[in-house]
Length: 339
Image (cartoon, rainbow, N blue to C red; front, side):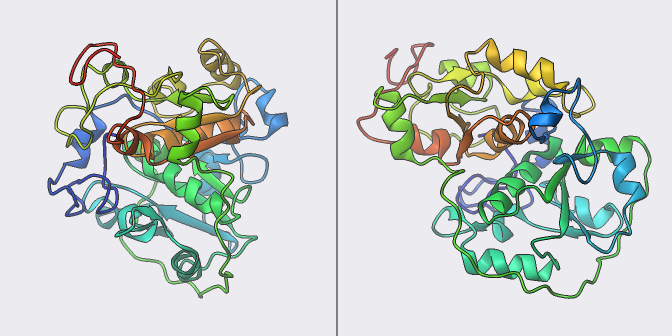
């Protein structure tokens, strides 16, 4: 998927000397897609006109709530940004810096951070299981949502929130920034295996593509990527040899879920948006994109805000589009043909 710095394996970006070898400017990547921000909510919140934004009832918190509660001893604020030096230039007071391409992944095996690595990170950040964690970042919270997905696999679900509107909204409202790195006492977060229930694998999506499993695949890339007109957005390395999409998948670009300021749209609008594509929560959903980061944003919206059963396929098109002998739909008739 287009963007930001993923681990050495995913794609390169200016912030990381990346594996594929090209360094992409985070700002340029942000411009490749639409603006966006993620959210989360339980079934009760889903019935409301808009997601609840506070520290207890929702996975979303507002900028007002965060500034009011910024000194809470049981709160940890974590920035997961992509643009080089953005954290160092100024961040939300008390925020810790987490690099998604090193802290949240295993850089050699192209995997999420393993149990030992994640526990070490949580301990360094002073996070216990009852700590409220607010994640935010630049570029519409893409990798903050990725962080929420990784945290959720280690059991940190209801206590992990996203800042609605992310860094963009905080700065637009001229709220305070700081350049100091906070110091906290280390926690004793336990080493536990990652849950497998929130992550889809290649075999899962292939079973859906072959109609062996009754699930939905939501491809949240741009229409041109979905149709096969392009393999990757302009300026982003083409890490797949074919263009197109997984058979049976539907296309709802992630940015359709957000307002111009990056905040999440009202819940009923979200339900209608996805229902028009045949996704209404009645069947499990697998979200997919190019490298898994944009799709983690849509996973957050579907699973946390709308309460739908959803998993994220972080292998996404860079894995599926390179696989040998699998079915592909290419509506544009490019590269390997129209089927």
